[in-house]
Length: 291
View (cartoon, rainbow, N blue to C red):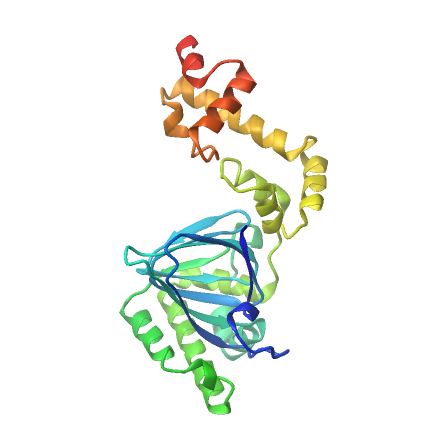
């Protein structure tokens, strides 16, 4: 059963109806196995990974990163996988902020947004950046602001200054990459076109339920919309696409079934061989010998 998280609510113990716009959270787990979860983020999130490895699937892109990097995750639905380090630890420092913070930042620094940026269809859904010396110093200073004190007026002002600090640094350090994303975040919410979700995950091992989640749809709505767009049920469509690619690789690339089954979205070799034989009437090995 996949975990389901809503951010920031599931990070915080209190039941307050109104959450502060800026939230810091030191996330730590000693779970020995990888954890995969559906995440609905109602805040934008800076994830400063400290130990372990994280992979995030958005509706048409995915990104994997280590403690040498940090990731800005816009408010959206996504799938997250967290893998502990060799020491069986996973730690990440999170800094969450709202659209209100973004609007205030844009209003305070309008000169940053005078350029024309690429359209929303071409933009990236995240921002990956190095945890250089400045960023490491920033996270260390941010962690000195204790979470239980963030409701005080002084702490709130301090967090606001820290928010502007990291935003201005990234604008200065990565103007060509960060500013277009920032402009798009302040302009509109993300669209989740079904075609992009599907066609960027043809060979992934994501389930129909996970694809529907990335589309922000129920499973039944996803299946119905899928048939409207592609004219066939999703299970059959994905099967055909994967079998066509498998046949091409076996015929033209001279690879073994054991080398390609995982990249085609099959968890194990036996399920791939069974599916291939059902489609073509012969095993991948025999098919390869015949061609």
